[in-house]
Image 1 (tube, rainbow, N blue to C red):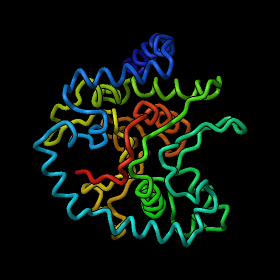
Image 2 (cartoon, rainbow, N blue to C red):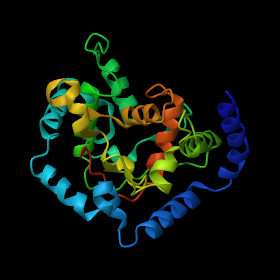
Image 3 (cartoon, rainbow, N blue to C red):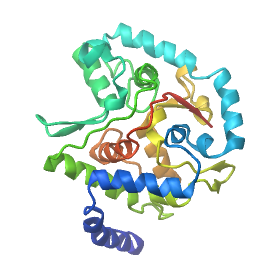
Length: 283
C-alpha cells in the first residue's frame, strides 16, 4: 500500500507538469528524443519496431515477411468484413481509413477507436457478437481490423487532437498513463519503451514507442499457441496493453475502456507521419 500511495502522490505532482506541453510540442520532442537515441534511423523505419533499430534483427524479420504468417488471417478478415457488411458503417467503404484512428467525435464528446467502431458496426448490422464470441482483443474482430489495416498500408498516421477541452483532457489522460509507474515492478510504458528502448529484456529488445501503433493489430508467434487456427496469433493494441500491464504485475484495464482508449489516443498521435504497415509480425 505504501508503494501505491507514493506512486499516486508522485503522479499528482507530475500531472500538471505533463499537461503544460501541447500535443504539437509533445510530437516534436518525442521524435527528437528517439532521433538522438538512435542516430541514423529514419522516421519511417520506426514503423518496424526493433527491426528498424537493429540490423541483425531486421534480417530475421525480413525472413518472416517472405511468408507472412498473418496472411491467412488477413484473408479471413476480408471475408468477415464482407460477410458482416462492415464497409457500410465507414467512410470510403472502410478502405484506407486506418490512419485516421482514433478520432474525437464532437457530438458525443468521445474518442472512437477502430476496434470500437467495428464492434458497433457488427451490432448495428445484427451480428450476435456474444453468440459468435467476438471480443475486442483477438479472434474475428482482430482479423477484421487487421484487414482494414492491411488495406491502409502506406497511409501516414494522421490522428487529430482538436482544440476541444474534452479531447485535450483525454489526450492528457493518455499521456499521464504513458508516463505513470504501476504494478509491483513499478514500471511505466516510458520506462521500457523510451528510456530502456533498444536494450535487452530476456532474449528480445525493448521496442521504441515511436511507431509502435502503426503495425497493429499484430501477429505474434507467442500468441499462436492460443489456437483459433489462422486467427490464433492476432492481437489488438488493447490486448498488448493488457499484456504489458501483466508483465509489470499490474491488473490490466478493460479493453476499450477509458484508460486504454485515452492511452491509444496519445500513443497513436505521437507516431503521426509514420506509414501504416499493419498487420505486423512479431515474436
